[in-house]
Length: 221
View 1 (spheres, rainbow, N blue to C red):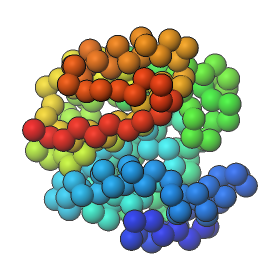
View 2 (cartoon, rainbow, N blue to C red):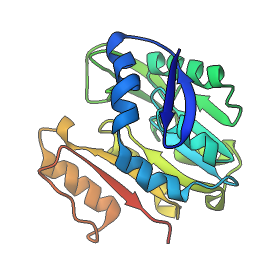
View 3 (cartoon, rainbow, N blue to C red):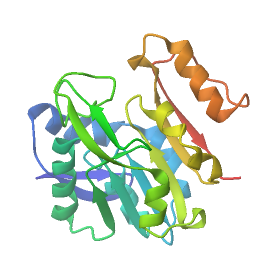
């Protein structure tokens, strides 16, 4: 196991490949997605639920659990999910619930990666392709008996599927804090990608269309 300190939280993660071990030991603890933590942490609430869509091995939820009533993690990549469960169990974090599913309104989803578990599993990739089970955001709310007032933040980091996910009309009914990682780099037609985002966000948001990755935090109104 690897001992970790991030954003004031101490925990352990399972050792896996040399490159991922190096990620946890150096990159993650130094500067990995510090902007994401700066956006999310002030909005977490010990009386509310944090939803992690695209949880990977848990780099956000392993921290968020300390400041949340409950964390709900959804990760379709079976290899990443295995490590996610190991990391949760090793730390005995009882307030993190997890499912090996993609969040989508579609009945199933085909995803792939150059290396499953490596953190870049996407519906745009064909290598090592697998079909995964899904759950919609509306089904999540019903299954866990949630209202929007129960939610602190919904974090979405799903490697290019964000436009498809947000087409589900249920999102339009929610007034919650959203943190969304954008992945234009997976698309040849970046202009279509950003036009699809505008259909959801409206004209009030300006995207840096030359950027391969960027973060959006939408505050609850």
